[in-house]
Amino acid sequence: LIAKFKNLVQFSLSMPFTKENLQSAIKQLNGTRDSIQGLAKMVGTSPDQAFEIAPIFHEEINKAPPQNKIFIMYVIHEIMMKTRDKNFVRGFGKSLKGIMIDIRDVVNETNLLNSCLKVIASWEREFLFTKDFCNKLRDIIQEKINTIEGI
Picture (tube, rainbow, N blue to C red):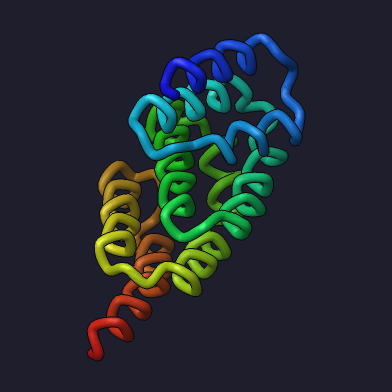
């Protein structure tokens, strides 16, 4: 399976960016480090298309089963942390509130929601986004955790 994904990534790196190629690659994520980093590497080569790429990720998160939503968020995180490209940060920044709401509305496992909080904390720590923006994202996820835990 990992070899199959690596072949997809190698094939995708040599192909022009299309919405269909990206959607296919996102759907094939399996949660392994190789699949997450491979897709992030593929996407990270196209910062000039960040404002087209970010909405595709949001659309795919919306359709994905709960566990896969977290995998897709890890790819977004990997892209922004590895490239530190302002286009990716701005592009994904425009979609993150909606992405967190989508995750909050469907994910019911506190360990997965806590993973989101850790990612948000790293964005704040690394100054990718302002403290206020990170707090807004954190509040969206924390609201669901509080509901699950009966707080």
